[in-house]
Image 1: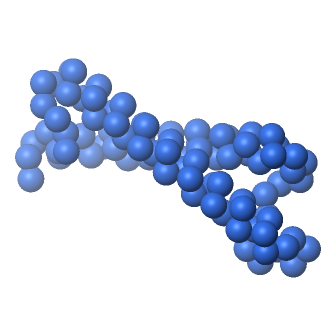
Image 2: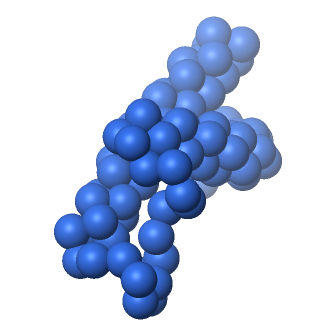
Length: 88
């Protein structure tokens, strides 16, 4: 394993935590924009219908994936600018 990849590992872990916070906030905001004033449903929420549960899960997954990709790419780009080596 390359040294740059090993050195980037702690940065990747920190970025993962940041990703979760950003994605969670973005999802909550998107859920409200869609007109849902109560929190997003859990898969086992008996009072919610299939459509609402699947919409929430799909939206949450898409937002998380997009935020993760953006944060990972920004982190790798910054690492290259600082070290001259791509961390992956």
